[in-house]
Image (cartoon, rainbow, N blue to C red; front, side, top):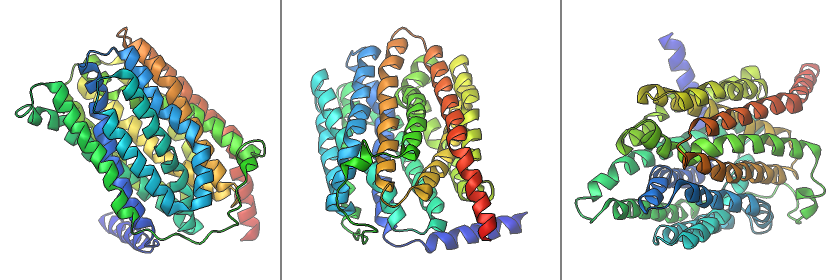
Amino acid sequence: MLGAWRQRSRAFLHSLSSLDGNVWPLYGASVLHGTSQGIISVAFSLYILSLGIGADVLGGILSAGPLAQAAGSIPAGLLAEHIGFRRSFFIVYGVAGLARLAQFSTPNVPVIAVAAFVAGLALSGEFVVRLPFLAANTTAVERTLAYSVSSMLFSLSVSLGSLLAGYAPTLLLRFVPDLTVAYRYTLYVAGVLTLLTLLPCMRMREPPPTHSRKISVRLYLWGMDRFTLQHAIVSLFVGLSFGTIMSFASVLFVYHLGTTREFFGTAAALSILPVTLAIALAPAIGRNLGSVLPVTWLRGLMPVSLMTLALTTNPLIGTAAYWSQRVLAMTSQPLSFSFAMDTATEKAKAPVSAWLNITFWLGNAIAAPIAGAFVARDNYVLPLFLSSVSILMAALCNQVFFGPVAARLREEAKVGG
């Protein structure tokens, strides 16, 4: 047993070391961006509530960023095709960092919302550019590993940021007059970390284009193929589901389960242990079971975790449910992305990536104000019920749309073999 584990670990490390060196600057940027995102995920909602702003207004603010990410995905994809990956990453992280610092510097709700929208507009390019960039620097065999490592590092850094955000405000209270100011300074750190992502981007090489960079809006809009549309539908349901738990997780723990901020920050950080193990298994799952059926089952199991989180008042049970939801989500995402990039044509990779991002964040933008309206009335059950229905629809559509495609590819592989 131990020998087999060591053999798998050596094989994993060997595969990791064989990845093109150009992916590592992106991984470095992802770590800094993920740490920033982890801080924001814990501190921002609590900061807004500490200003005396209601949860329903918070829901509207939280929808601004996702709405911008949805609106900006196609322009970001077109821009990346025109100016290349490296310059696109500079724009993404530079503008997002400045906008976030502005977002955390004022109690004015309209200014916060506009700054959040600008940050979301910039970050719309992060996902749209990242998937094709990794695809351009990896082989088909390496792709699931590359996406899994990307997800793993991002999750690790989000956990680190969550831990920092859980304890930093309390430490800062020794030097600042109140908790609101402590939250603000904590969030400033997140903005600075976003700007620091520019440093690893300087070490990126621009990969040679795999096809002509002649911009075609048609591929993104009226010329979008059925495969892209199907991925967009699945991603919309995933976004609707994630929009509840991602936007209000810290509020859910503090106000529904009655925990402290430190408890939630620690719980969010420690979730990386099962999440990392799960993500590490994703390449092996993809090799042995394919990328479609496991995604269907993983997403189909998520409602168990979501409804447990909704119905319990026990912090430990709630933590276990939160962990299991993250494990299922973070295991399924690399498999889903890998399938999308492997089966899309070269010219369709950027449009598929763009529409995955558009519909995911559109779902978040729709879900956040709906969840906020219920949370403002201390109703935490119905939003998580709606989240469960949405992820079940994502699982069903995934199997209906892509199950036959996966079966056909397996048959073709057998014939080819």
